[in-house]
View 1 (cartoon, one colour):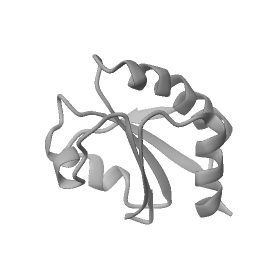
View 2: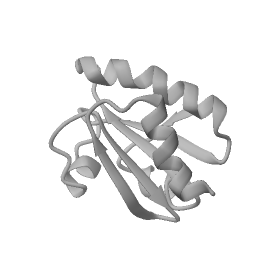
View 3: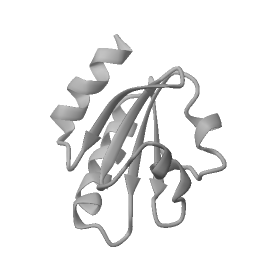
View 4: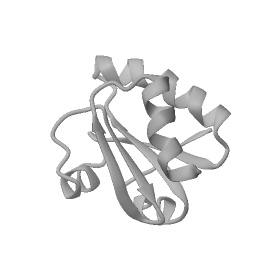
Length: 103
């Protein structure tokens, strides 16, 4: 399951383990393509926490990370950003990226 996070809950929700956060917006076509990929990975990878943040409703966190384009995916491990991916990512690309931090 993918959990929606806000500016207020982001730090707390992404401080432990491996966490992928999808920064998106309702009007973004590539974001709508990315979402089902994230949902599928969330079902297949119980060792990774998946979160999403609507950048229109939560402007502070994207600003903190310098996010200028969406979708942007941030992977954190134990609270530290280890990857930042911009644009649509295939399931295979994300699986390979996450494997670097979950093995």
